[in-house]
Amino acid sequence: MRAPVHDNGSSIRAERLRSSAATQSRSSFEVSDQNVRTRHDPAPAEGAAFQVRGRFLTALALRIGTDRADGPFYAQLDEQLQQTPQFFLGAPVVLDFVNTASFADLAALRELVENLRARELRVFGVQNAPGMDPAALQSLGLIVLNSGKEVPLPRDAMPAQTTGAQAADPQRVDAPPPVVNKVIRSPIRSGQLIVAEHGDLTIIGSVASGAELVAAGNIHVYGALRGRAMAGCHGNTDAHIFCQTLDAELVAIAGLYQTNEGLEDAARQRCAHIYLKQEKLFMEVVG
Image (cartoon, rainbow, N blue to C red; front, side, top):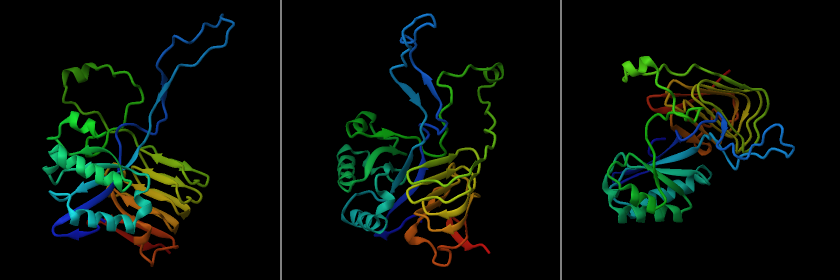
């Protein structure tokens, strides 16, 4: 659902995206060793003061399709919020200005952000906003995010050493990471986030409401799908979603989503196959 509501030429587009700020690798590294004692010290060793861990962030991108945030704009937004309140509840929001440059003006941007936050939208960043002043964005509590396919944070926090081949050819592009599929042999509880960043995700069991599945490739659920499932999270439009019982809060492929209210009646509570064709989600009953 690219633009849920249209009125006088403006549009609002919400899509799922994955932040490149971190990965689900859960790798951690100690940042200080001054508190670690030697093995001969009789006192117990103390841990570092803090740790740095990778984290996968789920956010919404609100693509602004108008040059003015006026009455018609907020009327469309309010209608969308009323239709799918659970979709926006508690979700971090990024403002995407790829279709307009009008909000480079600080006063206009401040008014927009204040109105969105008044609607309990947790706006924290912008993308596709090259003309905006970073200091002005910071004053509004916003950060700049890169758009497009995200690049995961390296497992190792130290700068990688340049190889001889890379030094000789700085334009050299590394090979893509190998495909790593993930299989979970247990039900997924509410609040859990399961990520297969470089492959398919298979769940042998049900997925509860409030749980979230994310995969670079396909998603298979051998049970009831009641939570959220987002396949092709890095932009793979050939990804698919399969489940034995479809009652999902949200399904998405390559950023195009459909909420529970928009699930096709013929596929609801049935064994279903969801795929993307001509930038539209299709749902078909299997068997």
